[in-house]
Image (tube, rainbow, N blue to C red; front, top):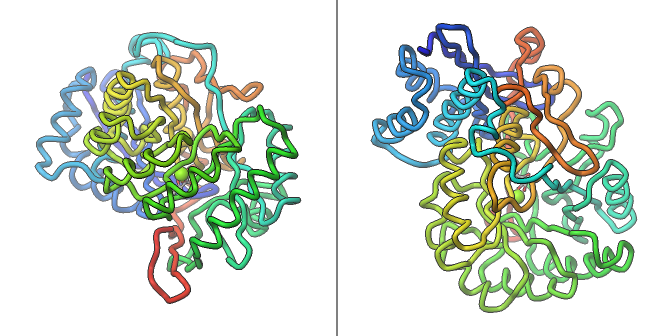
Length: 412
Ligand code: CS2
Ligand code: MG
């Protein structure tokens, strides 16, 4: 089964997506998500100029060998662009192997370890009434776990708050926060850690008072705190029993988490910007996190993320795969097949895509009563409609960035 053709498809129905489509000499096709938010075209070039020519004529069955070839023969390893490109090839080959075997990919990964994947959704509000409405709206949609993001008094715009602009763009449907904004330059936002640290515990106190002790609540600090500030936040949120506190401090410095662990028992989730198992080695070995946040799309595909999660399993660390709208339906399906098969599944992030995206990507996965299931179609269960995709050319978009009051650039 020889790889006969390889296409890199860029489309922008509700946001930009990059998809690799492989076709074999006996007509089987496989899709892989290569979307890197705000840097999409870098992966397109890496795939088109450097990877596609190397794939043609290869045996599509040899997934692990192809992974090792792409990772080692490049000489320059790791990093978001390389690992998104490798991920797209790996995922597309698993899709093909599933179709060749006439089985959904999760069956090739060892079969189902559960009946469905618990998901969490993004509730947000610039103030408590708006936040409470958003939580209720997500519960009505079926979510059994809720990520809570809140506005902070004194800050104009902040990560995670769905804006009315998004509201209008989505045909009047209250829509989650879409971080990448279309435009020629990244939007500048303001940030102040002390205002945030003073405000967030009070918000969780109010949410618990309103919604009770059971509802699993998550929060994303989005890489903005120093290690001691992260420890402070984790401690101040302990009374509200969070499911997890995410990206509480930039984790390039893996040791930073030791200080956080010393001061708080709030569960920690990290890894959505990690790309290989080596980014996790110390924080897993030293039990410094509780959830692995990597997505298949950004961590070298199903083959490599499975290795990360198998390593994490030895430390009772669970999966919490990244699943915002910048992970395409192909990347989401890959996450579901892996998540259904592994033992140490924790929870799956699930931001629902827009209607135009659902037209471009025909999906067979289901979301019922708050649980996702990849479906039982052979392969991944997602097909791309080239005519629909062709309607929406790429639109430049950037993630915002932060400046402190004194003008210093800060983590967004
Ligand atoms: C976020 C993302 O979903 C999350 O946990 O951290 O929204 C993130 O900001 C985007 O994926 C960036 O592209
Ligand atoms: Mg996050």
